[in-house]
Image (cartoon, rainbow, N blue to C red; front, side, top):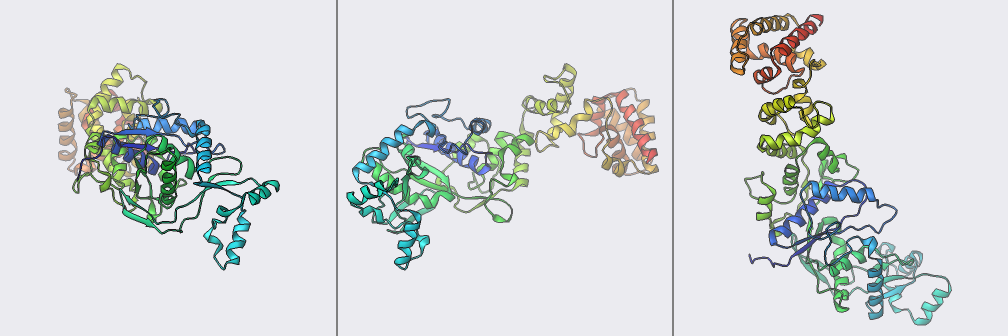
Length: 496
């Protein structure tokens, strides 16, 4: 494979509406990785010409999501660049000028036909009205156009589609061909002067010198129109040729249906709020259509940049698998240095009132001590709240399900009494000493299996059936709090 050109320019150009879709972020990630891999430029542009749907809040959120995932852009909002402005709402004069050039050069023409008139002409010719516009207004005379204007009609501006097949070699899918005449002349500008997406998007790409367009598979049917428009833009000196296109596979949800914006699983905020790591989530998104190697799923962003080859992206739909996303995130979480884990988990613990922000010296000591053990049992950062709360409170609240499972019956009372007796007289309050004392008293002394022996003690100490390692937790809690919790659990057990 030949080395990629050094002047690659990719772009990510979302509309600021509603929530941020995980498929959208996958598109951003692939564009970013392609630019970084080739030593190129990653351009971020906002398509905000739909005033009814766009919002400043969504715009700000988009910027925040990109930065959260580490996808810093080289040109765009708040960064600048040579081809701004980078918000379509600030480029109206540009579109007006280009539209006028296309009309003057004969590449575009005014069209006055209503939808009803087009349908009637199709039916009169024995054709299916669903075929859409029939290119009839290409041939209007000046007199006919004047007459329509006198009626008060406002023309739309349409592009003349070429009379030959439209073909391109897709970076992901290989050669794609649309037969001549299969795509009718399409609208560039509405009758009220408002430019449409199929017009402004290629114009911006041309003026911003975009070389590689990586976008969703759902936009593939519009590509012939873009190729035709690029030909016209090149002819009038606005474009310097046609970019390469690569259409990325759908991201699907349950049942292999395309993951829609209405699907809760599609909202990036869900994963951020749960405490997915940016690098863990980016790792998983990269696997939705691409792989670094057949036998490897875990990699860093730097490794992805080094290995990313857009021609190795699969054209097949990629299913969003939450379990796999969680497993990959858990692997990244376990790999964090303690210092890094602590700094990332503190906001989640502080938000729920588990500890102060910043933590007190004592809270910091306990958190750092338990961190390596907690990391092994966590999938996302928010789980630290339930997992670690017991270490930072005086009295633990025992979960009802945990009490029902481990504190019911005489056996639990017997275990708690034996544990209290042996721990009360323990002179060395350390993890090894606690472990040995409990094993001697419960497993050997009572003659019961370890699971039966330590289940009630774990629930007494942590309030849950799942916790960090028991003996280390008891050492961190201290003798006084540990014995108090065993006593409180005994009351629950006898009351049950």
